[in-house]
Structures are given as C-alpha cells and as structure tokens.
Image 1 (cartoon, chains in turn orange, green):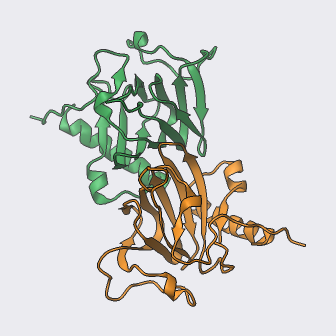
Image 2 (cartoon, one colour):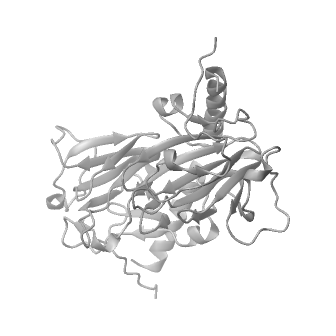
Image 3 (cartoon, helix red, strand yellow):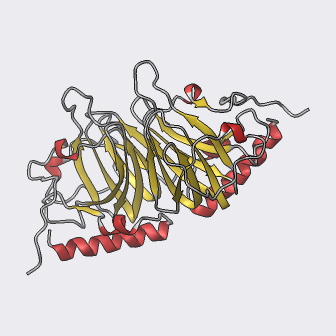
Length: 182
Length: 182
C-alpha cells in the first residue's frame, strides 16, 4: 500500500471512531493499522484496527470496517503448543455479518468479494448488531463483512500473534508492506 | 444491599452507558452487577459492572463509577498455580484516579473514604483521562476513584476469579448479598 492510501484510511477510521464516541490517544490515532492483506483492494478486502493491549495473557483491539469491507477468511492455529487465539467480537456500531464453520446459511446477507470466491469456504452466518457479540473458538475458520454503514467492533481475545494467522487465500500477506509515495 | 437499592444503581449506570454511547443488550442491562462490598455505603465505596466475556483465557468488563465512588484496595493473588489476574484499565469517560504500589504521590487528588483510612495503603497515583490506560501486574495492590463526573472504564484482563480477590479491608465481602425489600 502507498503511504498516502494508508493515511487516507487512517483518517476515515478516525472519523468513525469519533462519531461513535470512542476516544483514542494522539499516538493511537497516528498508528491506526491499515491491513490490506497484500491484495491491493482495501475497500473490498481490508481492516483498520487499534491494538490497545497485547500481553502474554490477553489482547484487546478496536476494529473498523468501512461499508461492505471484508476481513478475509482465516484461522488462528496453535503456536508452540499453546491453543490458537480465542476471540470475542462485540459490535459497537453498524452491523457485522460473521461467518464461521458449521451448517451453511441458505442465503447469506453479504457478498463474497468478487474474484476471491475460492478463498471463502465457511458460510454459517451470525449477524451482530450493536451490543451483540460472538466468541470464536481457537483454530476455527472465520471471515466477516460490515453492512452498509460500516462497523466498529471491539475484539477481546487471548494473546494475538497475527503473524501466525492462516489465511485461506494463498495470495495474502498479513503483515503490511508500505511503499513511500514518489 | 436491598433489591431497590440495586435497581436504582443499575438504572443510574444504564443512563451513564447510554450517555457515553456504549450499547448493552437488554439482558446485560437487566444484570448490571452492583458491588457494595458488604460495606453498606455504595455511594462512597462501590462499583457497577458488566462482564462481557470471561473465558479460561481472557476477560472483558465495562465498569461504571459514580462521582467520587471508590473501588476499595485489593489484589488478585495467584490461584491454583496460575499467576494472579493481570488487568488493563482504559478510561472511556470521566476521570479515574488509580493508585498502585510504588512511590507514594505527595498530594493525591482523591479522598480516601472516611472511616476506612486504615484499609488504603498504596498511594502511587496514576490519572486516566478518556483514551488513556494502565496495566496492573498480577498480585499488585490497587484501588481507584472517579472524579466529579463519574467514570466509565473498560477492563481487559486475564481470566477473572473475583471470589479470590484479596481486599485490604477485612470487613469486605466481594460477592453480593441481596436482601428483598419488605
């Protein structure tokens, strides 16, 4: 991603945090993480996030999804003998369509990102409105998409080790590569 | 505590959550925990809270303090060989005066609850405004008090086992006893 694209996404996420009444420190605002997963289509497949704390025992993040933006399918495997990350998504604003392993929902409400259909394989739908939450067990495939207004989601979890996440799409690079604008 | 007192505190906490833009489910609103610690002076020493999730790996809660309300001094000891609870307090609204072990602050900004002075023994002050947070190591004495507007605090932590908390004040019962109104 180009630095300018990162900055624009950070500003857009900042505005949503402000609208929802979530206060971030100046340093947190400067370091909002913009994940495009190396796919080059941030609007469709991407995620903006702030990590409040990540210790060897727990982690807490605040996630932003722009309207219809999708976090691609992945799972959190066990690492060095410790069970994979367990995480609870709590919707704070907007609507989130979450998909996990289990009986596929007959007609899902979100749209799988065009051109990436082979990399979305679980379709058990959970819809989260503000004040609703869902806990994803370790090592379970999942993906999620915001509704038309975008979404803000609090994530409470065991320790995050994002670099070990296993994405279904082999093209994905979880850790960002930022290119300076020329 | 009398049931009517619990209900009144729940309603007051609900209004503050609403003011701050934190959405709770109907069930969460009905079950806001009101902790008076068996001291019978909720306005001075007490805490209102909602536990979003408490698994064997992590916990997340939302805390409310009424204006100048104090959560009494306590620590989280190790339980069955596991290190004591580690917790991160993030201020969402209002102001929080937090006290932990360490060099005592010369002139602290809060007032130790009258009549309970012997049970407040740590005075290293940390002031948290919205967007600021502090992580308390396991088994460390701490207490906290809200400023004049009250406070809303997100707590991210390892697993909660409130029944094992060690309070400095021997009169304290952590788990509530509710008396039906006659």
